[in-house]
Length: 166
Image (cartoon, rainbow, N blue to C red):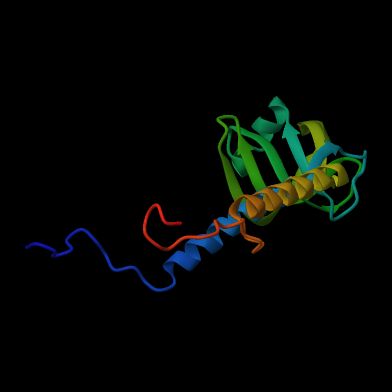
């Protein structure tokens, strides 16, 4: 049974490529989220705004049947503005234990008196410049440290021949 290969599976041709594509997409997801910041929302955010609503105790009780009894925050896109309620297409619900569930845009209306704090997702040019600068510096350092520009290093002259006769 020497060399039987038990416990090893053949590697498909596309697997290493898919792995690196997955790594790249994960990296880009992290980088793109670094370009946004949550800031206090306007009194009546515009339709289409991305909101993060932190629920108060009354909100957790009132929305328990809809999002679960330990719901702490609701994130979604504002669909219509009102002075009395937030109407959202929910993309995520965060819970008191730190876990969260992704939603698929289900509609949910939350009365304003059930919300402790409303935050709006906004583009941050300073974070974007910082992220782009960090990536640029890291790329330049990587290329320079690996000699990938093709300049090479000065080689030794001479060579060949018997030892002591060079």
